[in-house]
Length: 138
Image (cartoon, rainbow, N blue to C red; front, side, top):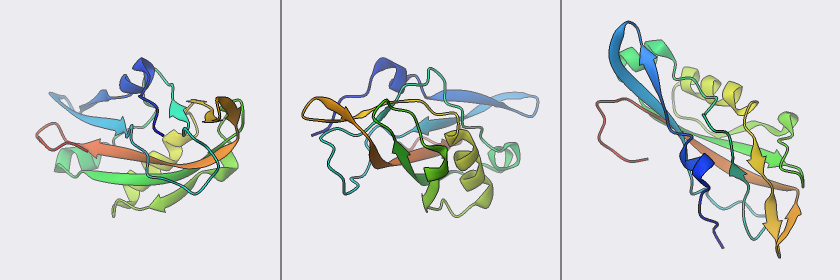
């Protein structure tokens, strides 16, 4: 069962400036997480008003995009266990992977739910780095 993303989760799409011009790149947390084997009915949902991920300026200038998949664990209060942050799937660009891993430490979540009750749970969180000239969806 999937829970609709909260307005705060939808606000996680943020534009980031690049070296002196008005073009921007975006970093977005995916709102449809791939399944992870656990006992949650509903995965945790990011609640940051603005994403803490930073698009690496050199890759933005080059138009390089990518998707990073993080493996995370939150407790029953939705607090991210920072020691749990792992790279589940690389974008193929170490700078994008590092940006996602570093930004993940600042993420805040609503907890996973099972039968309507908050539980601790592992889950996968996609992070999409998109150049402003790109018209593709994550």
